[in-house]
Length: 337
Image (tube, rainbow, N blue to C red; front, side, top):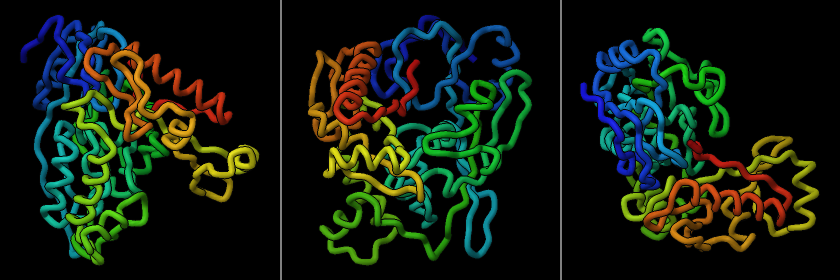
């Protein structure tokens, strides 16, 4: 175990922000995690996964624990389903591709989402009509205060839209160490109804898609719209799609009849934040080295040397402009540090 001082986090966040950690340690096994939490019980700590869902606006005046636990395995199966456990430090996209290679279904629509497996339940990540909660079985986590291990079931995680118990009731109390997913072995629920997947498959004349076909379609769509963080700093979708009650939405919709929306319940409507930002005239706008991506208005980008504060200022410009234009508040999906 090696503790680094004044450690640059530039390579540990997908925005590429050159913030520094007062102290930094890589956690590669449960024993080290337990030892660090015991030995540095009185020090402030910051838990870091893949660095894909955060914006660093300042240096981290704490001991940063980089969760780098590796490994994946089948822990149970029957004729129809398989239960797969992944350690928290596994790269999410690589894990998804591994499940597809085994012909295990359920995660293919979430291909190419940046980040690590351990942070997926925190945010209840999702894409193209699926969310983590659809295949999530349980996760194991260590209590920061006592180092006791606890298993959280799907119900206990209290999943919502980009929400979970880890962002609310037990925030900053646990470190997720592994996640178990329940995946299909056959009779896969192929979901191609959302977004451009069907059109992408049609380009290849694929009428009966496999899991790999769906994954490759999602990858192609994402690559056409979203910049590679290795080439252009970003965290994927920066904003949540706002959810409005139907009464409020109908009043706004009368003013803007061309507004896109999706019914999500008898009383609620989801409006695409990217559409709102684009219609507000902000898509592709640049403010120094920070800006809104030219192909996907949901994505804020670092063109090179933007600070976290500069990107945060752009996000506030976006929020203010959308509210002034449509009367709709959009919230950041990314954690602002």
